[in-house]
Length: 478
Ligand SMILES: Nc1ncnc2c1ncn2[C@@H]1O[C@H](COP(=O)(O)OP(=O)(O)OP(=O)(O)O)[C@@H](O)[C@H]1O
Image 1 (spheres, protein in one colour):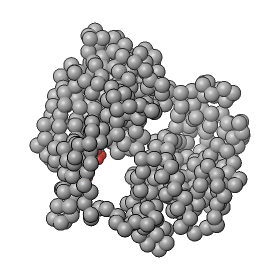
Image 2 (image 1 turned 180 degrees about the vertical axis):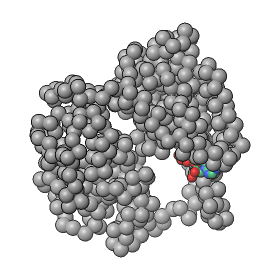
Image 3 (image 1 turned 30 degrees about the vertical axis):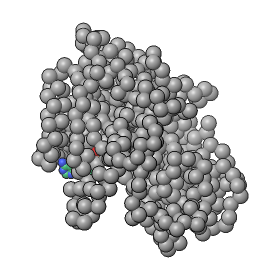
Image 4 (image 1 turned 60 degrees about the horizontal axis):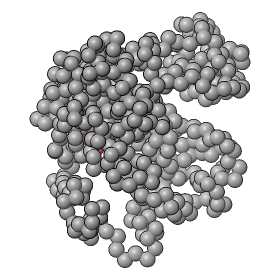
């Protein structure tokens, strides 16, 4: 591994570099301010290669340890100098306490005053249980747009503004981006990837993460129905263990006596199990777990997107569509063919008729005037074609890449062109908004790195570099 001063500077954004140096390295390691120079609008750090290597390794180790990993798990990576490492316990706690409490209090006032009656009831129920400190499990049941995230924001603001710790997680990376301070459940709790009915999380009794969990007042887990019940059960066993030192009844209480609020909608995607039948999927769901009987279900029934400043006509059409979708989800419309199939009539206004080439028709309808609009990021941000099968995704991608200007491409695994919208399928760096589901527009392709612009969310408009494992000698257009 070779890290030079040049590469360090060019890979870290100047603003982040600045924060990292002034807030962290300089006070600890006495890096003299004279070694940081501003030249041509860039920050230049003058350190010899050995020093840069030490600092970089330690920083990588700190990031890995925050995610329950270590360079020691990746031989032959060098092990950093221990004296350069930050105390993980302090890191974990400070990460969860590092909120502007004054700002949160102001936000809380406005959030609380705008809650609907049913949101307020849920908020009060959870807060009372947190104050009683006797533990409890809840499931906030609400379809998309019913205001679950709004409640998460209110709960996190209320507790964090008092200096309490709330761990907010979601089953998917993209959903975790919507909750303040959110992480994926797997990374936060060290849930094994090949989880089974006896699994526990990768958290050692007495470790810094165990200490963080012991001090946690509330755990929020969004999109819970997507995760396998073994994930919740692994966390339950782990918390019962960890909490023994703090709560003598922990082994008799779900999640060791912690307050845990799950949220989601069982009409959405349930756990994905390769080659599973319907029964396997149902049995893998949260409501098939032994934990479900202790779970109090709190329901949200109003579509809050109808109150988001749309015109009366827009609201009417959103309400009709939402109602129709809900009925499909509940299986209450259409003709029942058998246990697994319903025949549903689709209205003409959302059907594409007179189709000769289905791919061309769906692309033309979803992306009208593509040639005139493909430079517009909002045009891509507001549209997507969904398909349940990878084969169809490949056909749509092929067709749409052909519409983008640029030379034609030879057949290979990953086809990309500058200007193409892409979606990440891995959680790369959640703190930069780069997770499974993030959509970007490709802006530049180099041999080992692509540059792309994030399309939506907190980091919309930011350009990022994504490294690739192998050289794209015949795949990328330059
Ligand atoms: N009490 C409220 N007052 C004002 N706006 C609200 C309120 N509750 C929710 N909203 C707004 O309604 C919209 C939908 O709410 P939210 O995102 O919380 O729903 P959700 O159930 O989390 O949806 P999804 O499951 O699709 O993520 C958002 O724009 C949100 O800001």
